[in-house]
Image (cartoon, rainbow, N blue to C red):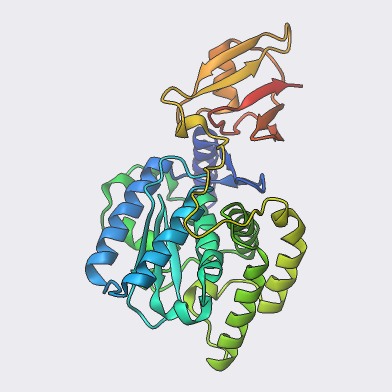
Length: 345
């Protein structure tokens, strides 16, 4: 048993060093994620195609257009490089919504009486998009694989999109019960999605105060249902806790809020990831000896250590990373993003 646990520990350490940690936009939290963005997109496309084939799409053209309009405004300010955004309204009485990896978003018609208006829909979509931007589903899958010591074997087969892969993805996003259990969002992830979602909502031109109004309506709906909470809220904070947290976040969100007309185009927020705007993304490294700027071509899996080796820089392990106006602490296994500027201490 001890040797097996030791092997698992080594496997997890190897995976960590190979893949590194990523950083969640807006919050700056470091997370453990074994799933690459390209793998996420492939899994999301496959799952969403199957969902559309097996579920009824809403025939309400006005409601469908509204979901797509609001969704695209949220997507315009979301930091998810290479996402292929798609917003679909499903005919289903359940009050539910979800966002699969790569920008595949589904909303059930059962939510419409609660959202009531575009701002209410923006609250839901911004929250779900935030989960995708923060790669919460992949983070949960990664933790399960690491805990079970399955990381290396399973990750090597994930691109095959076989039935086991689909089941794991569905469970991570609450889209089925083939595993007999779901992998719910943690309370930390839910609070994080609230934080990011509120900012996205404001940037897209929707009054962030409407988020509080929506959750108050949902609290009333929940009471009418006898306290039965749909899947996408089972692990969310209690209504009172969520509303209190949103009020604390409101000053920051309002700084980024500018009302826009329904037909006004939302300018895309400059992304901290130049992969959206550059075909040849790079990372800037500042040599601690002479202050010289060295440019390294970015590629998936590039870590602080590998970038330093490529540039021939000898320095301490820790460094500061300037990313999207923020300064983060980086270590040897920290995953770098295009556009990062690294300076060693």
